[in-house]
Image (cartoon, rainbow, N blue to C red; front, side):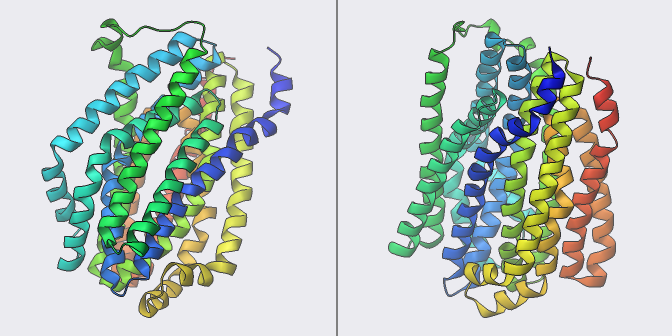
Length: 442
């Protein structure tokens, strides 16, 4: 293997994966922005707060199972790096089985999940009532949402970013169109936002299933699923990786749930203002995640080939490009931030509050790029224990900063604690990178 030639080509390979993922990922927060905009222009801030709370619950419920995409990407990439078509298919079938089992559990346990969610996320009676309705509709999309995680991870692990782009853009375009129809056209309010998302989730899932069948038909060695493929022992390795990433994701989502809950305790206006400003983080994080996703696929393939030089080259170039994009995003947010806020809400008091805290949202890209890209590197290498341990340490540091800063500085302290969270995530993984690199057999 000529790793020197490959190393010189990493910029092109990073961008071949990152560019479609940037477009794909930005379509996700665009959807969130449309949700915010259609709710933010209704007369009562409770509608905006309800969608913020309801969407956060599904961030917990669905993205808590985001390990399905991450582990699928890493394990597929390592099989793909060694040209193991059978291994690539094994990952798909096993991850898909886990996804459907978890989705069934979510639907069966929806009542206790809803009860616990609203205990942990207290809000005004009006906001809670509307958010509960949002939950009751969206929960039926669990099979489509979790199944799509597996589909996206499987294609990305094969260094194919164009197919996930098609799936996500189509899904989100349908969602946005139905949002506008159901809310602005038919006046269905929160029900319309939830219903639009539910329909779009199933549309994307069905499209992904069709594209999987096309990909499988082109493989020379077709795997026929049997009982041994789904035996308990066969799931041990995947279950261990998924467990660690679940703990990591649970800790991260807990931090943001605490953020939203503390904001809700400061009143509906602060809750709504924070929801508006979180769109800044959501937009930038989805763009930066493109480089994390590219790193997942490329470092996973390099690990599968035991190519230490290629592994390090892909990691460093992903970090460099991520930093460049983050710096640009921060500059844009400082210049255009007030106009973005005005576009997301027409409520005067929410706008005023959002202006006051805009600084924190604007600097988020530059402080969080390191943790996003390092996440991708460790996921591609399936070093899930490092991700888990680093996030546990990070959460402890976040809670300590929250205890110190929020009482003294209110919502400014709340945002400062989120900045601490992102910095600690990067530091804990960065300190483990040398050991990770040494583990790659050259």
